[in-house]
Length: 377
Image 1 (cartoon, rainbow, N blue to C red):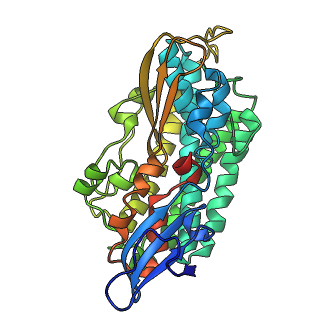
Image 2: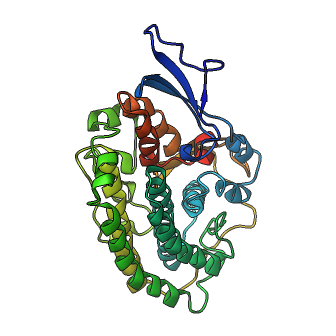
Image 3: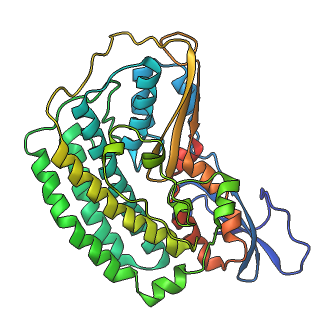
């Protein structure tokens, strides 16, 4: 951490003893190149502000200068922890704009990959969040299981992180031989591993003291700030686009939307833990119902969208992730706007941090679960 006032957004306080503290942009607990400017009074945080943009790459302008299908790999670099979720939102938006049909088998496989993505993302969040607060063992456990998910990604699409795993109209290829058996082996193993995580943390008195009553945000504040994802479900709002605005085949699946009422770091932890359990339910149903048939629909070699506009969003591991596309009738979008949940959720950081102790800042930031590639775009 660096100290001082040079370049800070916050003016020094009038009270004697107030201090401006720069946390980041190279601090590991900011989960990327994020600079958090804290005004402190002793060990208490009086106010804060965020300095973003260190990872800005002009993704929206890039999308406006490429044909629709050629922007798909770039979406991997938005939320690079959950690249297939970014791929899915873009290809679905393009399919709706271009009025393309997707085969049933492709829809089921897309949901399988999307829920594996949610598991991989939550496992990385849980391991790093626990390590930030001081629980190193869980970091090693979570990455052990996350490697199994990344192996499934690699087996299907050849990549582990930046996957480019979906295509406009369906999938690049069908499931390889033995892939479903590997998935079922993971589904049989993971419930016991999830139980181990609970045994390590959920009733651990140190974990409870570091998370309960910390970083509280109310349901009304969530609505006022336009928050989404586990952040609002931890404050009692059961909003999930998989249920509210179903896409692919989510309307055919039986699963619950986990919520907690307390709105603190611990509540958001419980929500994500149960979301992993619900993803297991979804995955088992998809495996049981998986139909045969083609894995990609009829897609013209040259995609030319009709003139018009569209906004399409999905429930990414971090919340409502969406693309607004305006078409002027050409082969590439005239305007693209990205609705990034990490960016919007991060704006509420001062609400969560004011009044907290300096040691609680890393717990609060971790509970939001931001990815800076998506924040900065």
